[in-house]
Length: 234
Image (cartoon, rainbow, N blue to C red; front, side, top):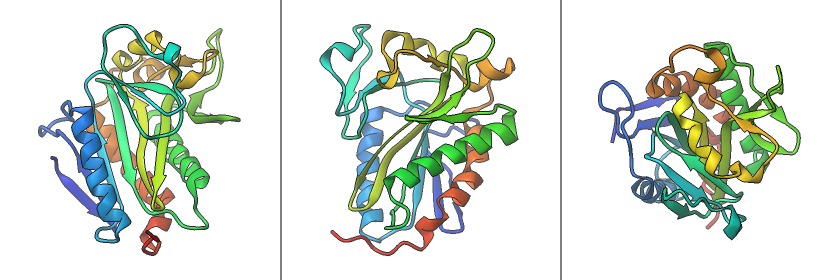
């Protein structure tokens, strides 16, 4: 499992960390771990958690994925219990799974907006990449420019059970993370592209662990409400 850091009540776990960067962690095994951690957070046994991970190549199909939207390139496809459609995870992409208890004030929509803001602030302050929200679309985007369409740099897909979140965000860090998206219509959006920190800066990709450490304080700030939320009803 990884080094763990606890800051003001949050515990950050870096799965597959080898002393330099995140290794590859099997998606199914990580999902099983998520469910175990989720049960403990939902029961009030432990405080808010964030798992950082890099997966080997895999497509995950949300509940609204249609049969014709599934890829045929031989890459594994895992059906998952989050909302939305199909997306890709793989090398060069930082995946974060915040597992936190929501409140009546901070429900699922506000939670997603706050994850978006944490990523937007990290990209701008650390990497000079100015992501934005696009009305009607979840995630973090780069606006159309120089003949390029709007393009997504970070996808977000969540599930809430017992008022506690699962799944999370996938931030493309290296250019290699974007290629396999060509085999699908990411999240069912056909009129936009996909990009990464490396693509946008023109510099070598930072290590995933570096990006994760940069986003830690932003998540702490945006999800601070989780530190005072009470134990959810069963």
